[in-house]
Amino acid sequence: MTGRSRKKKSSTRNDLPDPQGMVAMLDEYLLWMQAANYAERTIKNRKITLGYFISWCGARGITRPSEVTRPIVERYQRWLYHYRKQNGQPLSFRSQYERLSPVRVFFKWLAKNNYILYNPASELELPRREKRLPRQVLTASEAEAVLNQVDVFDPLGLRDRAILETLYSTGMRRMELIGLKVYDLDMERGTVMIRQGKGRKDRMVPIGERAVLWIRKYLADVRPSFATEPDNGTLFFTNYGESIKPNRLSDIVAHYVGEANIGKRGSCHLFRHTMATLMLEHGADIRFIQQMLGHADLSTTQIYTQVSIRKLKAIHAKTHPSARLKRKTKDREE
Image (cartoon, rainbow, N blue to C red; front, top):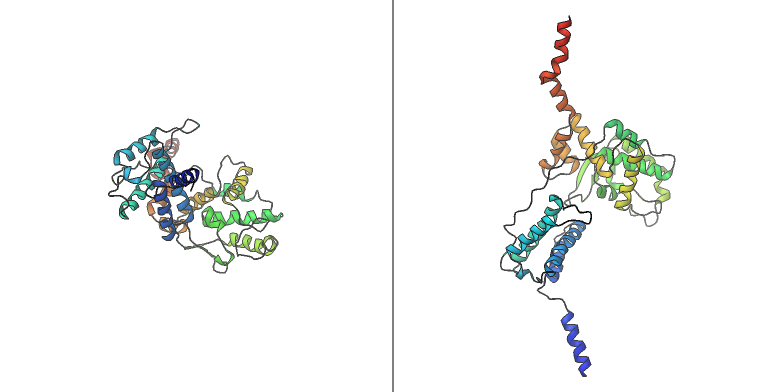
């Protein structure tokens, strides 16, 4: 073997990733998540957020999980707090939380599987996430205005009307609508099965008669011309027979919201917020809303009780002294 060959072989060996390095450990962790049946989207997000941390560590000469200590993790937390985006704005506390939480979970997994002796992030205090109200919620008349923007005499328009009606009636998430199959609908009973929603949980929710009517019309007049063989049963197609991409669906819904000229912006989640708020305002129990939305924790749903202001206004009008001012003035005149 020549000296050149020995040098090339040695260089190749040195280029191999460190089996104890963070990149190799991240690959092991992601494989474990796949075997544990985590959602593909969750795995992708973990890969991205942990990649940020690994890159930050690498820039500081830290390449193995065993080299990470609690002060290093806390230093990363401070770095996130002081970090500024390209527009000069800081990361929100929610964004900081979403970058730190996977780090804590990752090191917990490493310690549990004896890749490291202890978890350096076990006592890391995560920032409190803001409990923000939905930015926009439609009134019933505004929702109707958005729905009426659709040209239902156009095949794509008829499909879009069926999509908007489904979002408005059920409050399902964007990815849940994209994943709907024809057989998930029971139009006689007025129900729809949402399979493998957030947290990989199935749930059955009611769907209104009007939404069913538009879906029936779409199934009869449009879908057969959109579908291509082999037909996988997806409910809503593009006109090329393909599943609608998430960003494309958002653009479709946002377009009609903008065309309605109601001074509000939003997309698929706007109809989710609207459904929950309007049902609460009309007397629905918060636990039924929780079931409709597929929330694991009731506290997540309770945010809508703050958006549903109509009942609070009615109570205020009946009980606040200023609400009786007009009646008292009238009594004096008599």
